[in-house]
Length: 435
Image (cartoon, rainbow, N blue to C red; front, side, top):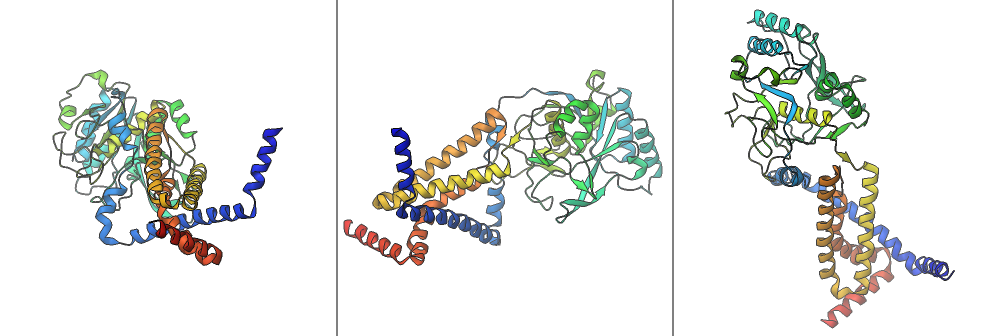
């Protein structure tokens, strides 16, 4: 009974008129900090001279440390073989596919759009169409274009010419990046699972391939019902750079034409055909090449490390091995970040009025400690549980809280209440006298 009585007395004191003002200003201080964050983001986004710095910094995510530094060496994937088509014409790709078909792969995925007929080589088109018709369990890529914000979908689905695409199913090969052109930074960390195109879903290329190889694994992935998924990168392949190389079997152009491989490498396996440079010794090509979390250089990256077809292989391996990454729901993330900010506003405000001479030193120290602990928590959760926490807004509010609250209490609170203004200036005068 005594404990219950103490609790009621505490609640009563917490909601006394004086403390009501404290909680009211704590709430207003929290709102002020989030408004300040929004203002800073808007201003910096319009300062073009900061673009090079922004491009380098926005490309950094703390979870990249897990992929490139903390994770143990993963085993090579034995389900998937990647074949480099280099710059072969359609007749050359057809010849590659004819050789591959001799060794009876279970599924073939082709990461190439054959957009129209080649009038200069109609026989090449005919040969390719014939070989495609002889290929079992064929998946070809599509591309979603022209995003419509109103419907939250796309207006256009680009496929290979019907003379080629009719022999297999299609899956979109769009990789989610912030780049507007090939020359810009284009880090690939996630992908769209099932974008809507003119009212219909177009599943991702890797999902369609997985569905033909292991329907249960593909269904388990689709049943997660996420519009986007973080890619759980296993590693690279020949022709790529960065960490964990050669985690997928890969065959170069000459390897296929010379049949320089054992039959068991392809039989009953998934074969992905796509561009991986002029050859595996070509380390300068950036066409269809992306930055990934496996890249050991975090900021100001000079050279992309993984070809698009290898990223699709990583997505496919993640689906087949059911090695998914879960993310904190947006609503929970928002609530947690607001509470982080509010907690710090209450704590820093209490320090501001109770220990004014210690305010700057104590709050700056707390900011550093809290930021470090939150970043560490993000890394550990990602590493141990494959779970992506999102404290970005909360960390930003913590880093701004100390200085922002000084502005709030000295300017905004002063404007709201004359009494608060008098209290502030009296406190300021007392500080100066003590100095």
